Amino acid sequence: MKRRILLVDCDQFFVQCARLADPDGAGREPLLLVGGSTEGRGVVTSASYETRAFGVRSGMPTSQALRLCPKARTVPVPRALCGEKSHAIREVLERFTPMVEPASIDEAYLDMSGTERLYHGEALHSTAERIQVAVLAETEIHVSIGGGVNRLVAKLAVSRAKPAGVHIVAPGEEAAFMADHEIGAIPGVGPVLTKELLRYGLKRVPDALHLTEKQLAATIGESRGPWLYRRMRGMDDSAVETQHTARSMSRDETFASDISDDAELRRRLRGLVRRLAADVRGDDLRTRTITVRLRDSDFRTRQASHTVSEAIETDVAIYAVALPLLLRLRAERRMPARLIGVAASNLADIASAARAQIALFDAEENSLETERDRRLARAADQVRRKYGRDAIAPGDMIDPE
Image 1 (cartoon, rainbow, N blue to C red):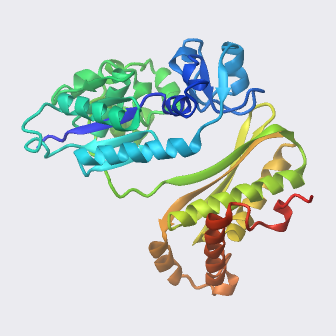
Image 2 (cartoon, one colour):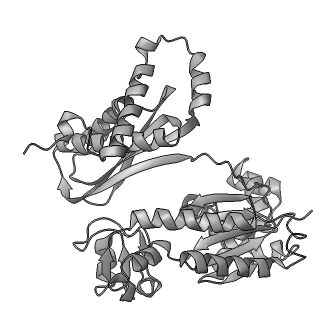
Image 3 (spheres, rainbow, N blue to C red):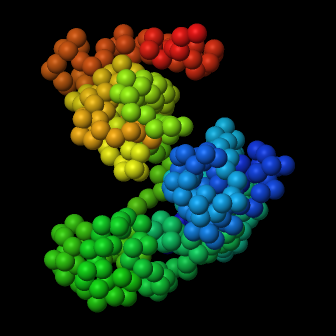
């Protein structure tokens, strides 16, 4: 049975949410930047289609975006509304199929395989259009939908559907569809591999279709060669997974003015760790890998990571891993910082983490955290949920009056 996969992608999602949050302000502004500040600090989370005509793109420093489009209005991300809309969209999608996998806050894969009888033999394109109409009617969010026999084709097809359209690649047309793309556009082909392929004159998919798996393996490596051979032909066996554990979680902060003081950076890091640890515990997870990221005043971004032997979840334990990473980055380059971030990856649910820790030989008193630490951390989470995020905080996080 041929699979029927859709990717639902919210068009300029953060821009749509910002306009809904402030219909009389941002809602009437065609040149809109979401994220960053009016002073040019931070980066653009999302840009309206009108500003993109000036060369503005997501992830660009806001100061650069405002130089390209000086008349653009900058507004903060309406985080609460974005979360509400993302949840509401998922509820609509799950009425069409139980096989829904959120890929991000504004994207979700749907496996429509086996629903043909339910929808009386309706074409996948028609089902996708009905999904669009339902999402817009119930959430006020416009979406684009791409589809085909696998996730890879659906991901590329949704780019052809924007804005607010539907593009379905018919079964058997995958190879022809892929041949109309540059190799660098294939998901998973990053800038390093793209540059490497360009050295061999391989830019578009047809440029490399004459190469065998062995020839590609000899050119770009034993693992990447066969993988790229399949991807260029539109082959992808990955499944839509409804039970999906996040690969990572992160928190970061862009400063209103650059910070050079190490003590202040440690204080900001502790605050981010406190929020990150609460996120980890909130999803009943633990983490083994902590990464600290700094963006210097010259926009150079650096990071350092460390993986511990047993999974952790408490503020104290995560900070104990993160602080040496920050100190290492600061020692390597003494530049004022404009952003600091901390991420947790190598995540596992509590049950799995607990089973793994039983096998360790180290006694609990030699661990980064104890069961008592975990109980205290979760009790603090309950207090903060009831009385506010700052109801309980470390002493160095409290500003003296």
